[in-house]
Amino acid sequence: MSAQIDWDFAVDDDAKAKIGAAVRHLLKDANGSARGDIVREIIEIVHDVANGLLPPQHPKQPPMSGITYKAYVIDAFQRDTDRWRANIRKLNGKKIRVAVPPSVLDEATTSADALTAEKAVELAKKAIDAGGLS
Image 1: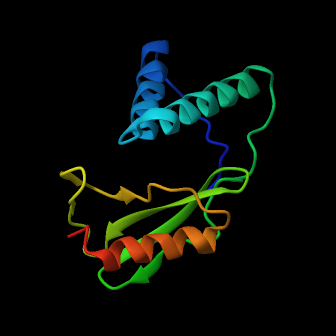
Image 2 (image 1 turned 180 degrees about the vertical axis):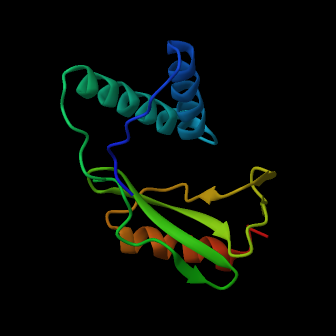
C-alpha cells in the first residue's frame, strides 16, 4: 500500500470530511500523552504536504505485522524513534473485551513503549497470556 494517495473530491467539504474521519480514526482509543503525540504527528503531516514535501514511505509501518499468536493477530508499529507498541486483534475479527479499563474494542494496543518491534510483540504476547483480553 502506498502512502501517496490522490483523491478527486467533488467539493472541499468532501475532502474535509475525509480528513475528519482520518483524524478520528487515528485518535480513537488514544489518551493522555499518546493523544498529544498523534496530534503533533498529524500537524507535521499537514505541514509537510503544505510545503510540497512527499510523505515518507511508511516509516511507521510495522516490520512485524500479521503475527498470529493463539487466537490473536499482533501488529507492531513505531510511534517515534525507539518507541514501539503493538495492536492486538482477534484472528476471527470479533471484538476484544479488555478487563482494565473495562471496554470492548476492535483492537487493543499495548500500553507501554518498547525499544524494538520485537519487544513490542513480546509485550503483546504477555498481555494475551495474562488473560486481560478475551
